Image: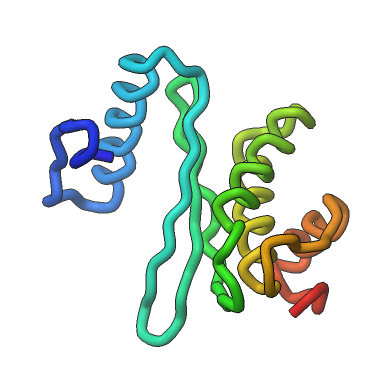
Length: 139
């Protein structure tokens, strides 16, 4: 986002300062583009384990969802799954935290299935969240 929009990026940040810096960056973004809500996701790797995480930003509140281990069978549609999780939370009137965690779980499940049409219900995603990803839904 900093490179694309030419916003300044402070790469020398501590973790707590990083959150404050991220929140300031997102606040500038939503103000500059007159939007009420901003969310995003990212993948990273530690050793051999891949991880998936996400965030939501609304009304000067930044929520970072719990990063979850990622088993990728097919990444096609995972961004759409994350977005649909965010939209579901907004429609349902959930908290930013639940919305973000639901979106992460939806994207995790989408990447753990083959092809572009994962078949799981909202209830299945909520059950996966409650089990911290330990249910054998479609894996």
